[in-house]
Image (tube, rainbow, N blue to C red):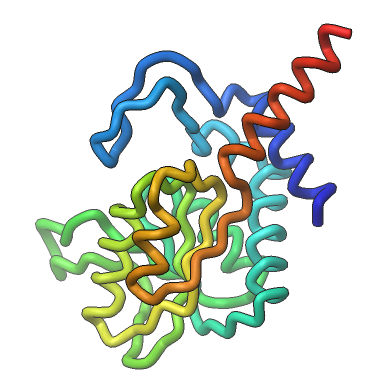
Length: 189
């Protein structure tokens, strides 16, 4: 498990998924670094690592779930990979209801009582994934857990657990930045 996690972190570093500068995040917060997991989800090996790490984490913790969901856009490929890995159906949560057709805010089936593993790419405050959880719960689903590839350690865990959800980060940003320094140190030797 640790080996797979280190490989994923290395892939993130190699792909340029971590940028330094001045950024405004989706939470509205400003940051001197940006984690763009979308840069690495286009790599099938990295996507497979993410799916395996999430599936393994959920299994180790003993989370039972019926469906995998991901909010658009960044979490969709990850949720799809987890769905394929676990054999559980996929649900996509739109940011807002479609303005045409059925006007639905989800793609996929959600039934009353379904236990949902909600997957996210990156969390800062947890606002985006909590909005997705509200949409799913409004349809009668229960959130079994929220799994995230990278937690920026800026309040998401507290926001998510205070709502009673199980929070499962695969990588914490401190681990990512520590690995970056370790790799950088090896390169300068």
